[in-house]
Amino acid sequence: MSGARRGSSKSAMIQRTLGKRIRRVRQRTGAGLSSLAADLRVSASYLSHIESGRRVPGHRLLEELARKLELDLDELLAAAGRLDPETRRHLAPSPAAVRLCRGSPGCAWTRPA
Image (cartoon, rainbow, N blue to C red; front, side, top):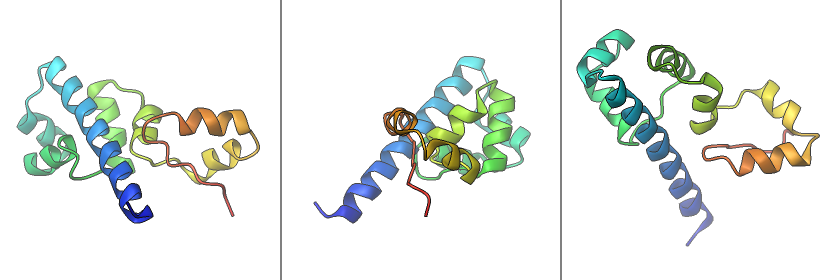
């Protein structure tokens, strides 16, 4: 298997894991797909694509999802592979933090240049 395929497979797994978590929490709270999508100001189709792992939401939408579903924003950001440069900078000097991050689903840490 080529490196590109492995990377895309990992990315697809991350997207499915994030989407499954969002769907599970949405269903547990009793929120319907259409009503949550309307609250988030996105289409139900787009939210469905996120839940099925076909799309990864941006930072703003992850913030809204965290707020609406009472989820930890940092966990969602990590699951989506969206760690900010400041977080990456803090992780860089600590091999233990890097190992911890790499062990987390969705952690897309790479050593800063």
